[in-house]
Image (tube, rainbow over all chains, first blue to last red; front, top):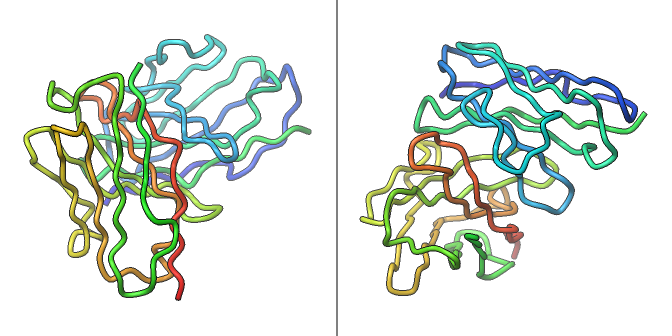
Length: 107
Length: 121
């Protein structure tokens, strides 16, 4: 299995802050990396696919970068609705695996 | 707009078989081009991909669950289903069905809201 490790596991930030979440793969996954946002009691929502492609309808303050083993999700200016848990997911191997999640909380 | 909705018992006894169905609306499974997955989330934990099915019936399962999992499709009802046998308390989770974005990226675009299945006697 390809292990996905996110850091940090939790993060406190304020509205307007720039936030970066990191995801590391246990082996090279090229650009087969996706990011999701999940709010309590809801299904995950696709934000970024193929490492840096913004899903239609997702605000442009979200961006993704990286390749091979190291990836980042950046929120350029936090909005109140962005406080949620974020997951990365690799799709290089058909045995899809997710990171453990990063909980973004209001400071 | 594609919508997915899970249905099935919310309580299953240990050693029995968990059975869930995902009903798809706004799009046809038989039109092809997409993979239909089951994903679960243990309470307060992360996400675990269980497996997928293609409209043709071809499947791929997570090896950690493969011996207990069957995913099937009924194109006439526009549904696909999950069966997980010999369940234990460790199978207690919210189960989501999902469709990939484009048949190639492996990203999950459409999700059901999820259904909590508790394994308990």
